[in-house]
Image 1 (tube, rainbow, N blue to C red):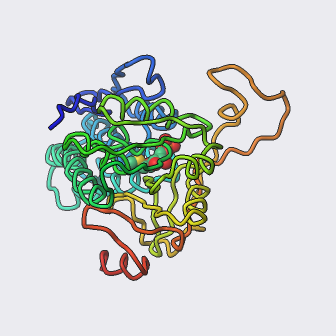
Image 2 (cartoon, protein in one colour):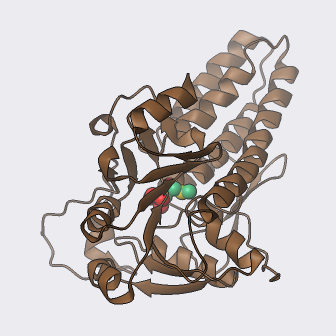
Length: 348
Ligand code: MRU
């Protein structure tokens, strides 16, 4: 059994502040930020210092608990008014990953029956910590289920970073690779660099190397050639929001990989916790797709690479339709076949 190197946690609760691994600076600089205000938390989510659906939810939950602990009010009504305002503020940091809204709602629901302001503060903090602890266990379970799909020696393609630093620990799409490394099972991972902000090149490559996983980096436009030339066996990706019929929003470029998987007749898997499902939306065209600043496309490392004045379209996510998905790997097991029916069974 291989000794897995410790992968840093992306977020930590420290009572009066949050410690955050600055993912913007990786892999060259390992910097930890101290977030002590709700504005720090909003800014860290918006500017991708923390990113990845579950990690965004955990950070926002900690941010709301942090803010609530500073309220100097006497009545629960006054407390709830401030909490609602701060909840809405944090909810405006990014639109696509549903884990953000899921975590914030879990916090506000956790204090429905409290009788004092102090009790509310304690409950919010405990709920935020619980969300992080549960996510670690959930990711481990996703990893075990996902690992059962792969045989030693297989080559698997992924995009973005659905890894340990995008969650409480282990990750979703990367969890099987961390577990395989722990168990001495050899899997070969191909990581798409993930333009425009390079989560694959900067984060997945770094994280899997730390874990002793055999990982090879490719640029996004090498995917089709690599599937053919290297004999890729499967594609696995994370998710930001999965609707009631199984349509899945994930990092821009995911939809293209699903189409390629279909063309090459290899399985295309989505790995995600139940907190990433949004069963209030019947299908994927209703998912709000974040469009980010044009600088992400026109600049690399702060240097302009495209002419001034060029029109830019920069959607951060795309939606893969359910019929291209071979299976959705959750903590409860693997959903296959009629995804609408399977999701309906799981949530009702
Ligand atoms: O813009 P990002 O980096 O937050 O996008 C992240 C992704 O698309 C991930 O694949 C997804 O959130 C799953 S993370 C376990």
